[in-house]
Length: 120
Image 1 (tube, helix red, strand yellow):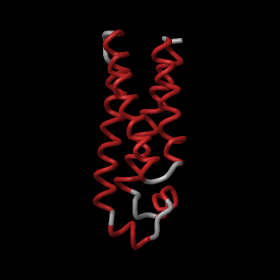
Image 2: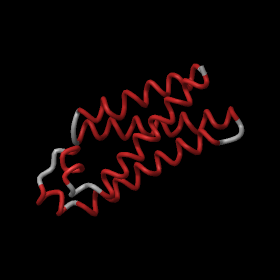
Image 3: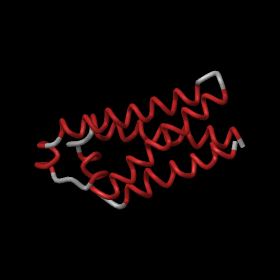
């Protein structure tokens, strides 16, 4: 079960690396605008805000990766639990304030990974 949990945590980390790239580097490019449903003018006006959001997603990914690589298994699972909880809170806030879709893209996968970590 531990390897399943690790794979799921890694997937969530990779998802947040992808979100980092979209928000920091592609926000006002066609791929980023399509991903977030943005118009060019709005994307251009908010590009620095999106970069900041992307940086925070990078911190979530870094925390999850740190949890995967940490040498003490018990501490590693606590690190993973903390950062998965942070992902879930961010997803809930995003769903409540931006798009409900975020709940299913971010929160639900993090919850599944969290359950796997707790069961491992």
